[in-house]
Image 1 (tube, protein in one colour):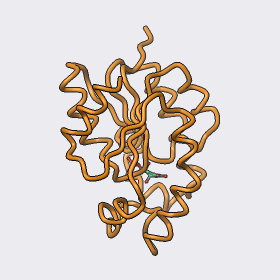
Image 2 (image 1 turned 120 degrees about the horizontal axis):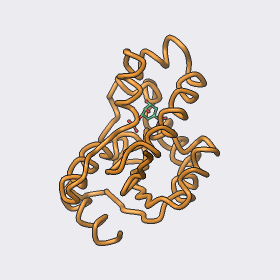
Image 3 (image 1 turned 30 degrees about the vertical axis):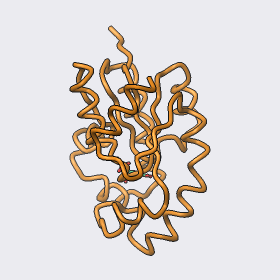
Image 4 (image 1 turned 60 degrees about the horizontal axis):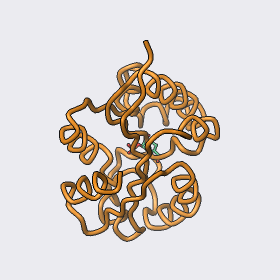
Length: 167
Ligand code: S3P
């Protein structure tokens, strides 16, 4: 039997998709799922290891399949990895879903994630990487979003409330 997520969360890494997603799921009384977690379990290695061992294109192919599976197999809150929207087929699959884009500005991003070595895309020169990442992706997040919730200066609880108000 197929299911569909109640809410899909998109947005850059470090924006708080997991924290907000779990709180939102609690408030809605539904389950929470994260495609990054699905990938780690299915591959039995970390996301960073997949990037290093196999490279980003292989990770993106794995991610695309994981998102497709989760979109038909989960009926709660679903958080996607920050780069999932890079894939046009994934963006097409998100049409018709309730998609919340959690946004943050570059300085907030640097502050929150700057030195996190577990995130392979930010290993060197975080501020420059963030600026480029946001420029390349912002319009893709906006394209799939039904709701945009700014997270700058807000606690996870406030973000959840703003999302609930907007949905
Ligand atoms: C990525 C975001 C990460 C993870 C991978 C690539 C990206 O997910 O999928 O490191 O391209 O933005 P989170 O957004 O959950 O950190």
